[in-house]
Length: 447
Length: 150
Image 1 (cartoon, each protein chain N blue to C red):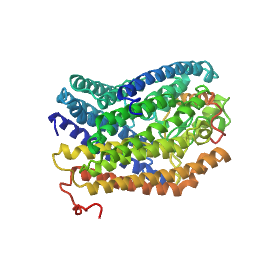
Image 2: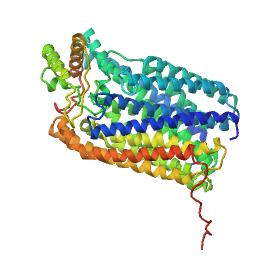
Image 3: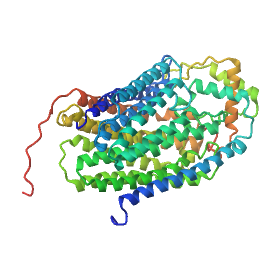
Image 4: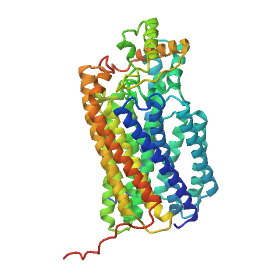
């Protein structure tokens, strides 16, 4: 740790990991309700469980992004954070807001727009926290060295905070409501968050592979250019069937197909940098997570996104388990795994030790990635059957769902593996104090 | 390649192109906004009753089980076309009665079947919800869903 103020990131990462735990446990519970629908039905209905599952995810990913920014900006700008105190104030506001939101959900007090269920005071809290963050981090960058990584990171974070304004705009007209709702949801995860992802990935590549900064930064601009060029008009793939004009079917199909490109580019970028760099960085776990994130993001967001994005296909698959399959793998690859890569890289430094317990960490990678992949496959099968039975044959929803029990059971099993992996990851980050498996002897090459 | 595509060129393409796409998106959004209000949802008036119904829909977070125009939780049936499915799209009174009858009978308590919670709604709220669902159903959604099953 070069700069004292980077320590702020430690508390952000801890808070993020705690919420990560809440998120996956909520997911496990929701998965169990699919298998055994009467479970807790009277006390904790499915809609509340799902709200906690999705909201906890979004907040912990944002906490991870904020923490990553506080960690990497001092190193990039070569100076301490403008105000450490403000950074902690921001964290406290976010935590109070999060606890308040979860508490009020359990009490049955919530909004009704998906993912934006937070009570109004929590929404304002998030806005205030975002403003504090932007001021704090922008003043740090402006006073110090400016790099492509901080440029792109800041641009992503400014834009995503600006888009949060649409969380407050809820027109009475349902179709307008839906259209502007996507300004937050789509333009977050398929545009501005990609900038944050690319910046963090670029930073990790720079540190882990030792490739020349000039090369990393040039490709970063190329990647984020393809992300925004495709992602902004790609919003059209949500405007097929909500009352918006028919031309979105073509705009959405074409541009959202192009959304595969930035994810393919990020995956190629990561592998090429590792190949070119040849730096033998001791933190292999962080490297595995970085490569894993870019690869799974390509499959989850890119391939599984494309699977149902063409309007002729989406006409039949829209709102089935296909969407759920894509959503899970895309979020896991692009944002969960990326955050965990950053935690894996930064936590040992923040705790001032050499990279430790990497074997446990890498085991957790395979458990979680294996679990999420399996979950994605079974939900894709379930969605395929659902699409055929319900959308082609015309059987009623519940009749079809009753046929899908086996897939939901397998999904629960996959979810259990993910939870186990998550617990193992958190344990490896905050509890274990030494390497538990000794590395083998160094081999002599060429013999 | 590396001579033509320098870092500053890549950056300029990124900024310039992004501004271009934001502008195009802005224009199309404005056009879509007026399409929604003038055409797609013009089939039924957006009354206070419909507004109340939307509020009821949101307050009870129906979207976290059901889907509406295909968006939501996929845990319970699509309701964007439920009034068509029930055959009451043009009949407000029957729409209210059938919705009220259904919601009052929940939760079913049947073992192994997904449970819809019991929602305490006033008659006014229940009528609003029925009108909101009728209003949503008359939206021009480019003929989605493919059939009445939703």
